[in-house]
Amino acid sequence: MNFEYQKHAKFPNQILVRNFIGIVSAVDIIDSWKYLIQNNLLTETLLGIITNLENCELKMTMDSFKAVIEFMEQTEQLTKIKLAVITNNPKQIVFPSYVETKTKEMRVKPFSTINAAVEWIMT
Image 1 (tube, rainbow, N blue to C red):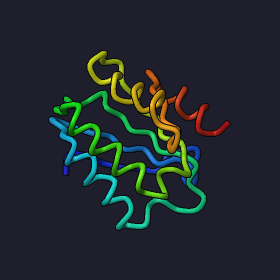
Image 2: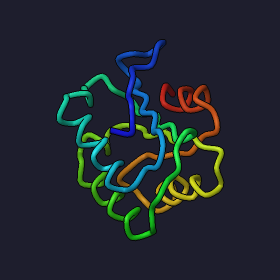
Image 3: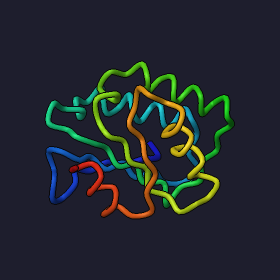
């Protein structure tokens, strides 16, 4: 497993933080969503998830990225919450930016800091 998750220290019932580490593929991202679902971590009180990509290298093509989007759009729990992505890498920011502008089913937004992501999720 190349990700770890934790509840946000200040908002443990409302925000979950996923930290990806190392080389990350589309399969890894889908598997991480499945893990959260199977372990009942997407609760009724959850308002958003922060995905931190600062310590990883994404290895995805546009086709594999589309598979991630398709999985997310078909997962009802993910369409009900805000999904913030933390990255300063221009190669990585294209993915959440694309979802933000092209997908009506989900609320996804890129950020450069966790504090900015928390503020967006909590408003």
